[in-house]
Length: 276
Length: 294
Image 1 (cartoon, rainbow over the protein chains, first blue to last red):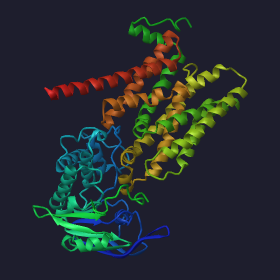
Image 2 (tube, each protein chain N blue to C red; image 1 turned 135 degrees about the horizontal axis):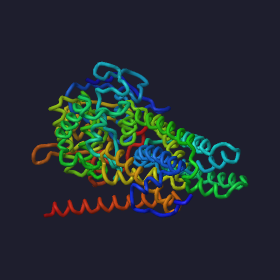
Image 3 (cartoon, each protein chain N blue to C red; image 1 turned 120 degrees about the vertical axis):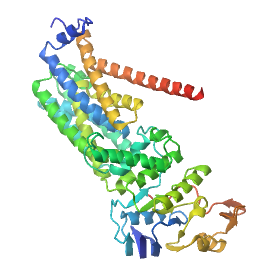
Image 4 (cartoon, rainbow over the protein chains, first blue to last red; image 1 turned 135 degrees about the vertical axis):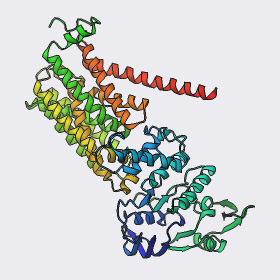
């Protein structure tokens, strides 16, 4: 589905990462982890064809990445929509379907294509369980509700690869859990490969097939069992990190600095290269 | 002109007949209709894109444009279109670091705006003709719209609206979701430049009826009122046009029958509708909450 061979990216004079080799199979749920500013979002932009490689090779679905490909759904990092954004949730979903088409859409009674589009939007809204709020203005919805509609938007053209940049950021804990569960469900039922960039690995930990971690200009991959261990994570982040197990047996990652507990990589602020 | 300022008879047929008795009034209605439709549609996008300040500036720079055109003895319309479009391109050329940040833009735009107003005043002073010209440049006038002007307005508005129709969907996408749109291959930057040019055209047109200071009566109030009522894009645009037309038509009639400035009549009506729409939305929400509680 996705493979990188000895890939490197330079932004200006800085090498963001190099020597990255990665293989993702179709239908996998993959997390891209690592501290701030190591180029996790840059990886997504490379896959989208927005940032070129400076060395090595990348194949997406067996081909070189193409800008504007229908085969990839993308959710960039964001805070939220402006509260005054007076456009309905379903309109935002619809834009994912034909928002890049020129000219005006024909009304449904004239064009069968328009009716199909309306049906697809309804299907997507149902898929992300957004029926209750999809016709309200997007700006008036909560972060979790907006995130559901944006996931629907990204899935509009049945992509085989879904890229999400910090989709759980700025959500409260119950919403983080339910969005993570939704993504895992979509990954399985819609047979979509999901690649998710995350600060905090805990909400998605139990769903992961594969973990990619970036640190100091390199990346390594493995199954969660290989990567989510106290030794690997401590070496990766360069500070003591423990993997504990909850009463139901799911792992939880906890970091220690001077006795205070924190989530690895969960620092204040956002990565500065996001919009580069 | 026996009927000007004579007041309404409240007999609709009589009033309309009286209103359209003179050719200058017919032309005022033609021009007002064209301008109201274009401004309501282009304004709908402007309000959604939160580019009100840019629109305001484009209208203010139209003032020195029109004043300069009058000074060198050409039609003020050339000044409106030329300078608004030029200003739109200057604003479009301001480098923007992130997709949606207008803070840097506002600083530059504000600076240009102040300078332009100063220039406009200079041109008006240099032009020793009639001082009333300034008032109509600033606050609008519906007298003396020629047949030629109506044709020009119609031609320019048609081109602008066809162009807007062609880019409408990607523009909506780029407005709501610039990052995703860019990833989908939508030329976000180019669309933003194109929209500024269309906005400049709408502003230059509306300026000729409402004056540069009251452009917002047609460019902001109808779309803002429509967006308060509905968040459906197509319905919103249609409602915006309807409000723009009602405000313009009734405003022109009031200005004619009561001999009051047309700018005042149109803005007052627009403001009134805006208040009503917001009050209605409040009440509707309140009723819904009550029903949910019950």
